[in-house]
Length: 339
Image 1 (cartoon, rainbow, N blue to C red):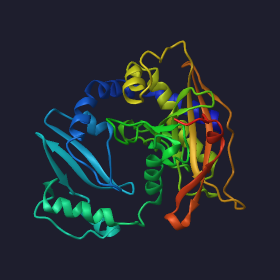
Image 2: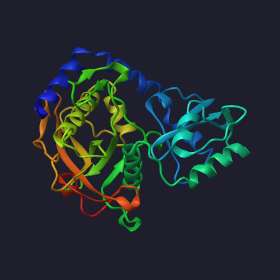
Image 3: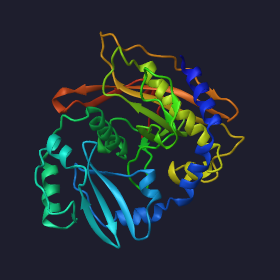
């Protein structure tokens, strides 16, 4: 299978299974980003903890209750809820993993405690002191990259300028798709609401200072069993869905309200270019670095073009394996003067 065949197969699946169109239109109707952002201001998160959101969380938001996913090194460690203006921390379903990976063994009388309680304060204090976890290096690198891409200027020592993650209500999130493509040993499939999520959705500025949407698929390894060209197939399948979403009945909402582009800039007769990038380390001198074709791919009938790019990083093993430098065609085609 090649890049063009992946896009063709994903297009066929989306045309044959049209339930996604109405479902995403309903998401658009229910999402209240203003309420979600207002409740977010009711509590503070100490570094290195982060909070994430999701389409399903925002969709269920009401004027009485909102919820947020609390994470450390990319792993969920609890849920923050705002109920009638009061903030709570809930660790239901997280206790086993919190003790296993982060050595947090304390139990509470209830799964849920107030955010300003002694238990919650001690919880935050513990996770502030945790340096590293053996769990999911890929999630840890994803968290690092999101934080790195979120920096505003070169003055903040940003390693790669002209990239900003797309946020939902001001928070990191994974954009869901109805496509299942995470297992490179199997063909892509349509999975309704159980499809895969995009690792990093971002806005970039290309070499001509034009803003573009970017779909990024991250791997913490570059190995012979899963080379770059196959990681690209997964990213292209997800990007094909985004192309169809932008041309759907709710496309303007996603383009402007969620992805953050200028009002009125999504036009049917104006081509849309979506950057599709793989992010992974490269092991020089070793097998497993085979790179696929990077030719532009039109999504037939939509006036949308997918532009494959690569982004490789070097790991610093003395800093928990976090990326220290970047290279590849994505970097080569970014706007050089920063944000």
